[in-house]
Image (tube, rainbow, N blue to C red):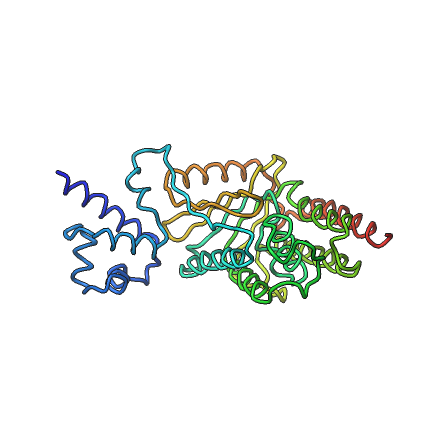
Length: 340
């Protein structure tokens, strides 16, 4: 009897992994390489005829970034397992955080264009959008390290682009290049842009910019970001860092929600597999692939979309009004900095 339970959990695990892989990748080949066994032996493990050892199970879960606990507790809908990038005051942990985002996007990119999608309910400007602009990227990295993580080396520093690790800048650029090729639906509210603008204003008021030029350069790139996003919304297509379309198909939709979103929430779809990312501690996220949780998240997002106004595509009037308000707030900050 116990053997059947083990086999059921094992075959369930194998099916879950298989559904997370693109159609052109063979699970049996992946397992054979990972466990250093023959394809025959890999097949027997997939069918549950050969039980996985503890060491093999640990290796599989680590390689495919899944938690076996979620299968043990699959009948308990109140139990959901999350993974996250642990951050500390050491700057290397932020590099690992960015690398983790890049790795997740790389996994998305393995699927055909019509089988990958991200739905982003944005309390703040989606982190990817910042990374198309170098000075804005540098400011965000500096702010998160100095004001949120209290990273060593940032304590008494003032913002300047040269202060930022070039490897972090390259990682951020790589992240945007990938995100620009993933079909996305973004839901913004009136408050979505507030945190970035308030961060800049706070740093200006507290003397955390090395010069007025640095502050205005960041504001200039925030403005360029809004212009790019507005253009993407108009075309229904994402733009690369040179403002060139990344697809011949519609791969970008933007909605305006009158309802407060509350927190950043992302649902990614890769073939038949879904993953839900929930924000915490300002910019970090927790990830789960728990089917019940992801389905509930999808229902919430679709309900939010139904109650929101589409401002991409032909919705020119609504889009103009929305971005006009944003530019007014940003221009007020720019005038403040220029006059002081």
